[in-house]
Length: 86
Image (tube, rainbow, N blue to C red; front, side):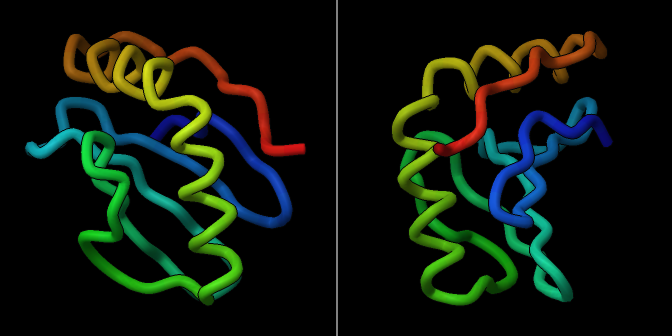
């Protein structure tokens, strides 16, 4: 699973040819979560409240790039790295 971005201990990843809806995976310490790309909502797993807010803020800033990476992964192409939250 390619890593797209990392920041504040959060690791953002996507699977190749993953199921719909478009989404990305987040790992943070012992937590795992899945975030819907279009709605910017937690759809699976859990994260601490502050970590979830950081991920959602980052995703809002990079929503177009995330959708582009989703399409690349659907075509079995390597996604492009996305700048971390600063």
